[in-house]
Length: 182
Length: 442
Image 1 (cartoon, each protein chain N blue to C red):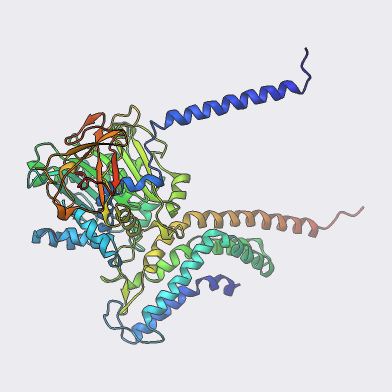
Image 2: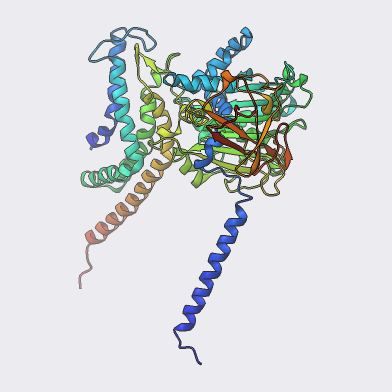
């Protein structure tokens, strides 16, 4: 279950880990020299941002509905009490409503420096750890607007699950109730 | 002869269908003269007009401090800086063209800090005391002025350019989603209590005071900035000049109109023009269709909302939302193989709607290099394709393969150096003309 929830947000984790390692190596986001590990820190961040952008875009296109339905199905299989199911489904829906669209932006917010100010206008370069991240840094800011499509999908699926889970619970209670003897 | 039963409904349905189609055609025909919208196929005609504002909207993403330093240096470095912000380095030729078009503009002042009260008037103080939570950030705006060539030091138009969303700024995103109000002291609320002071600052500009005819004030911006630009036009309270026109690029569906009382809203909407310029299919075009705040795109008068669709790029909805892309496309559409296409302002008179904005008459006298264009040369008239058109003889060095001639007519009045017109603001392009001529004055 946790794996299913976390998989779409792996690119953001990669960015955070890259920054962490870069920091440990003594690199600064506004530094002029390239931070060497793997290809380069900037290159890893750029690739991860592209993946995160793809995930966010597809979630906005409707993948969110399939992903959320799968999560709800796993919740139904794994948890028996109605309130546990609804609470978990709510938490997952909330994650699904915000994180795919704001997660990429959040993951680079600590990298903002005078040489990299991501904005929705795509104005200016974005240089971090001595390398160019490119326009994708700006694109993830614009991705935030896709919450207008993604949030209604998440809310809709949660409401649907609320109805279905309650109906399943009521039906289970009714069938479990002792039948009067004749 | 008695009609058979099934025949009657068929005839009735046919008659109704015919009537409906005839009515629709008539409505469509009557709308053509009252519809201010500019379709994608014709945008190239107006690209030159929109380009300076697109450059300002792009530059608004840059720090105000940098522009302040350039203004203080007094070398006009802000023109290059603005063009470099709007158009990528890979398009150096377009940068060169855009620089010529943007040359008359000069940066005046701006702000990128939280706006408590620029001037602590009683009204502002009262509004500030009732403010909601704040994020410590405020709307970024930059004020530009178009200098007159005829009278040095005076300006003919002042533009307030607002910045769009920056990164994960809480203030920016809460302002983006304040469609139905918010408990935060968002940018719309900060501007509401300060816009009159900003208008006063504009009126006290040296170039504004020097102008014989008071310069008109316009506002512009991209995305969130376009929403703020629309808001200040609707929320100005001062008895002084109003914002005459808004040039909104990829605008947010939020305009903050819910914060303005109805009487003031109606007053400010009188004669106001809002041009919403956007790349076809950009991410907010869907949001505007679903949750557009007042004024709707269908508003034809008070305010007159003009939709200007640019269809010059392909990509994802998110990818098409960039201001750099839009500005570069507008610069590209302004030229044909390096030859400038004719300057044309969108029609000012649409239907019977009275508007306060007037395309700057000074524009006609400003050449692309910022100088009076061939003022000493008289026009040469010739009849082409059954109509009289004007062309301007020039030095041989400036002759190109393409010659342009045309006419300019505005609100039924002919302008200087213009003879006849087949349509308002029309310029005719004559390729490979036998006459030595150059583009008409802007």
